[in-house]
Each structure stands twice: as structure tokens, then as C-alpha cells.
Image 1 (tube, rainbow, N blue to C red):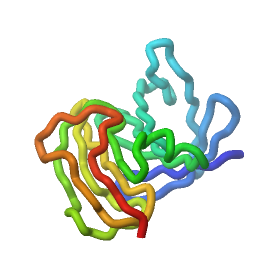
Image 2: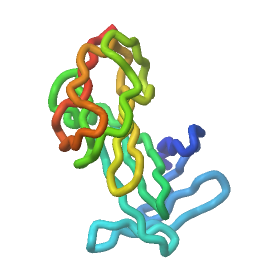
Image 3: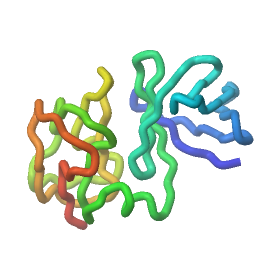
Length: 153
């Protein structure tokens, strides 16, 4: 069965995909169904999910869960620019956690965005050095527009 990583409150959990309509996290199994509206019903709770490359953010009852599902070609499609990181949806930049010249490693939180009253961390997908920051705190940003440029180490 395929396994993806779920990050919540700084802790990582394995999520096992069980068939087409269920997942298992630890000893708990959850029914998962896609609604016509685009929402996802998990054990009768309506949730919303947003994907950017190999990361999905799932919004449930005011909480944000981050799921990593590595796919070989996801990084190229998601960024649009080599080494550029973008917003997964229209959002407001709440915090910039790095400066030009900082060294980062995969998974480091670089920017925190806010959308639908939930925080969305934009994380480094590769090790590198911050070459440019093209947004400001408080700015409304659009998907596909580069926010941070990284150069390879």
C-alpha cells in the first residue's frame, strides 16, 4: 500500500492509503470520499485540500494538515521557474522566515502565507541559498508567481 507523510504540529506521521476510499494513520482508519463540490469528506467531516507539487494542505475544522507525497516530476510542474517557490493559492504573506543569502535545506519553512484564515507554510523543496525574495509581509500573492528564488548549493 502507498504511504505518504503527514506533518501536523511539527510531528510527522505515516499515512497508508488503503484502497480507493480509505486511509490509515497509526491504528485508525478513515473513510475518504470526494464530493461534487470539490470538497473531500473524511469520516463524514467536510475538508478542503490544496496541492502544490508534492505537498498537499488539508483544511479540517480550522486546522491545517500538511501531507507530502513525493513524485519525481512534481517539482518542475509546481514551480514554473527553476528554483522558484510559489503560493499554492491566492494568499497573504504573514511572515518571511529567511533573508537573502540564507542557506536552507529541504523542508525548511521559508514563508508563512494565510488563506481562508489558515496558515500555509511554503517550504524549501531542495537545499540551496536564498537568492531573492520577491514579496513583502502583508502582500497579497497569487499562485504561480515566484515568491523566493533558491540557487543550488
